[in-house]
Structures are given as structure tokens and as C-alpha cells.
Length: 265
Length: 314
Image (cartoon, rainbow over all chains, first blue to last red; front, side, top):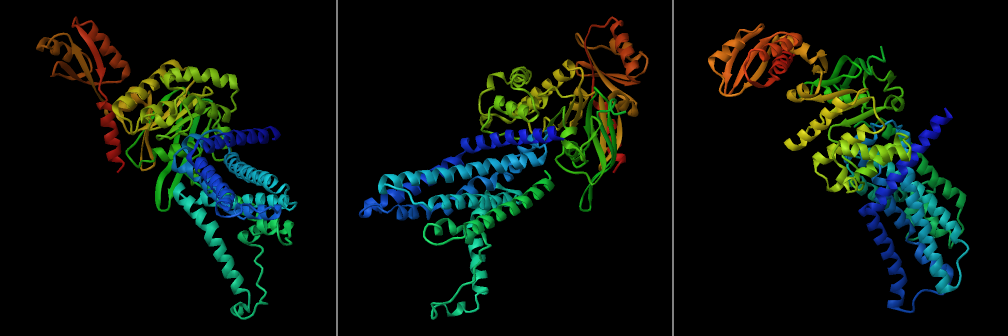
């Protein structure tokens, strides 16, 4: 039994290696790298081109860069996790891989972990670069940055779970990519906004009454992700927000696996 | 029974809503046979092979590979099984060598075994000079040769092929058939189940045939015996020079010959008999004193049996 599990995990590792090769040799990686470099360049160069340059306060510098993290994670989920399952069917590579003595759970685990590793590695690298810039420009790093990094990693788990769920449902990689992007960027925030407005009785008075207390939709993925930036300036329940994002990731990954297991060629 | 039949299908049924693709199919494939699975489009050939290769699930019934139920333990059932289903696509960013390494690692082969088998198989499928080129640059025929190659990894005892020459140009078809012929002639412990809708391909490659229609098995036997159901075979005799009336007369007089007619520069012989009698006919032609340089059986026999069976099953 143990040997069987060990072999399943070994096969997952083989699938993961191949999936990462696919990412590194593919155009999506180049596109993503290009976007990351563009964001970094714009944030770093524009302040010097337009005025006095970057702030000398480490907190302010980090806030500037971290405000874009959610977008980069969202793009990574769209470019990598959203195609990982659907491409096997669309490109007919499943006819080779799925007819081999390998469990679907091993394939799923290998593919999901590959995209997750890529996502987390990028977030880590981005924070490392931000820390370096902060050190060079302001001579220090804000202490809350580690918490922000932790929350960003949890956001990767949440968004990649949603993306792989969409990848397990769709029949075309292009559709999966677009739908993942739209859901994460627009649909979830719209749902959150509707929930907040609907569950805040006095929200109609928002323009006349500045003391309106809005409903806290803390259990929504997009709302929890606000903590990545918020932790740098306000008090944030890091444990709760982390758990919400991981719960989204785990729940959607579990549903994705069930759908993938049932999916026929 | 299992050792004798590496592929066993019992009461297999697959429904898609109201449509029954496979209808209570029973089929046991003999060990070391090369069996052609024939049938018109929509007969249930591909569905059956997809169930066997774990790409789809059966509605009811069972399919066993080397004695293991594919639905209950697909991983164990597919051990020692090579597959080429339809025209698969590859990871285009990999080379054939990298593809074989990936598949080899999946099936648990050692690095050394993968390396040595890869060279040997690339040679077999005539892809040695393309071993390190990206698959993205390959033609469909070349990719199908790589597909056959990956199916041969880890020395499988069972190979399942679903229309392996479908969609290929004539040259690609000929290349794939040649590889399969070599495989049949050179490999001892190997059972092959190959679906096709090309009768001449099955005649050329297979020693047994199973004909299906509407998801049901119509016949399954040695090709010779299946042809015997129609009772008549067509044999083309090619002789040096123009065949004259004397030669045709001599052939007409041989046992089991129903008729012998000139057909261009050949003699078309309508022959009724089983394969043992056909062998006797070949021997008899040889001693007639006619300068025969070719004796070949037309696949008309299989074609007439096939068409009769399909017509009856409508």
C-alpha cells in the first residue's frame, strides 16, 4: 500500500517536472515575465521621470510596489493554472498521458503543484526584488512585508484553485483563460460589492452619512486579498484572511479534482 | 483463461443518453494474436478501445487487461500495455527523446533502461535522425511514428491501436504499416488489438479479425476462417509473358478452382476452400510448369464477408 502511494507521488513529481518544462518553454512564461518587468520598471522609473523619484520611507516604497501584487497573482493564475487541465484535452496530449498506468490523482497533483510552485516562486521573487529596491533607495525594509508575503502566497493558493476549477470545466484553453481572468478581476469583486451593499441597511445614505458601517464580506476571496496591501498600513487579521484564501483554494481544487476525475475524452 | 486472453471484454455497454455506442459486447483477444477490429464509422470500435485504455468509463459490463479490471484498477491494468489512440498529439516543446524519457519515467523505467530502449525504438520507428528535434516541427506521419514508438516503451505484452493510419497521407500510412509489420514479425510475446476501417490494412497486418456494428460483435475468428464464411477467395496469379488459354485452362482444372479468367496480364482465380486447400493450390500451381512470379490473395474475400455481415446487421 505504502509502495503504491510512493509510486503515485513519484509519478506526480514526473508530471510536475514536465508541466514546469512546458511553462518555461512556452510563450505564456515570456508574456508573464514581460508584464512583471514592465510593472517593476514603470513603478521604479516613472517617479524619477516625473518628479523627485521614489519615497525614502521603506513603508511607502513597499506599499507602492505591493499594491500591484494582486494583479500579478491574478495574471499568473490566468496564464498558468487556467490552462493546465484543459490543454491536455484540447491539444489531445491526454491520449498519450491518460492511457498510461498512472492515476488521475497523480496527474492532477503534478499539474496543480507545478502551477502553484511557479506562482509562489514569482511572488517570492517579486517581494525579494521589492525588498532590494527598498534597501537600496530607503536603506531598510518594512517589518510588515513578511506578513504581506504570507498573505500573497495564500492568495496564490486561492486564485490558482479557482483557475484550475475553471480549467477542469472548460473545453478550450482560450475560453478558460478569458473566463478565469474575468471571474477573478471582475465577477468576484462585483459579487462582493453586491453582497456588501445588500447587507448594509443604511448603504443608501453613504453620500450623506459618513458614519455608515459597511457589511464585512470577509469570506469573499477578493475581500480577503485586500489584506495583502492592507497589512502594511492597517490592522489586519492575518490568520483569518489567510484561512479564507486557503479555504477558497482547497474547496475549488477539490471540486476541480472531482470534475477532472469524471471528465471523459 | 486470463493468460490465454490478455484482453477480455464481457457484456460491455456504453450509452450516451439514448444512443448505445457499445451494446453488450463480448470479445476475448487471443494471446500473441494480431487482431483487427473492423466496423463502419460509429460501430463502436473507438468507444471500445477508449474504455480499454481508461479514457472513458463503461455504462456496464467489464473490460480486463492481463486479468485486471480496467474500471477497478486502471493503473495496474495498463501496466505492460502500449497504446496509440486515434492520432494523439504530443507536447510540442519536447523532442522524441524527451517524450520517451517522460513516458519512461511515468511507467517507472530506470534512466539507463530509458536511454537504451529509446535508441532501439527510435531505430525501429525510423526516427533516429529526428531524435533531438522538437515535435512541433514534425509532420503528422512522423508524429504517428513517435506515437507508435512511445507505445513500445517498457516492452509491452499488449498493444492497443485505434486507427493508427487514420488521417495520414499514403506515404505516412505505408511507413506506419511497415513498422507494424516488422513488429508482428519480430516480436514474440505480443498481443495487438487494432481498430481500422481499412479492410486491406487488416488483411495485410492481422491474423484475426473481429467485426462489429451498432456496438455488437458480428464475428471474431482467424481471418482465413472469416473469409471462409463467404466461401470464395480471389487469388491473382502473375505469370511471365501474356497468360494464354492453355495456362488459364490448366489453372481452371485445379481442385477447388471455381473459375480462372484473364485480368490484364494477371489471371484472376475464384477459389473456394479453406487456407489448407489454398496452400495445396499454391503447391499445385508451382508444379504446373507455368512460370509464376507472384501469387497473391485479394482482400475481396474479407470485403465480401464484411459487407454481407454489415448488411445483415442493419
